[in-house]
Length: 202
Image (cartoon, rainbow, N blue to C red; front, side):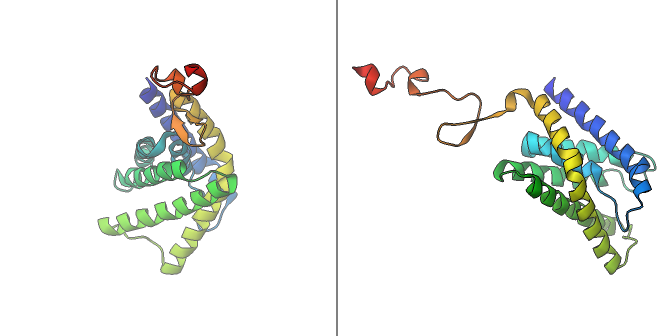
């Protein structure tokens, strides 16, 4: 059931992001590139669902992007790129302390990485890149900047929804300060009858 909820949330968020990219973002007339809203969907979900969940969310979001009209490139191209990005983002989210600025900066870096991977796949498939080297550098910088700026508008709310869908996977803070899975018990007396405190032995 939880898998179906995750898939439904990913699909709905990716479709909404694609709709905004095609209808609202072009009216902003941004030079060189646009914010990668579908990538932000994958990043927000990966931040709550971890490496495997982030890879799955990235694959589904990328596949929806591949199949959305007009579908001119090879099917699976965006799915592959966002699978890699989602897995990396999910792993990083578990290892790095979060802040709004750090999240935006990482999102910009992932947007640049996604564009580079897309370009390399295009070259491997013989599609070319359609940009000169200076144009590609400008597109990389613009995509990273716009995506970083758009991050606070997309990621926090979607991450909160992803957290609700995750349900029992919430993390608790252990007494020693380590993040652990599941509930934290107050002491060894509640976990093993053979381990008792000094007060209980008297």
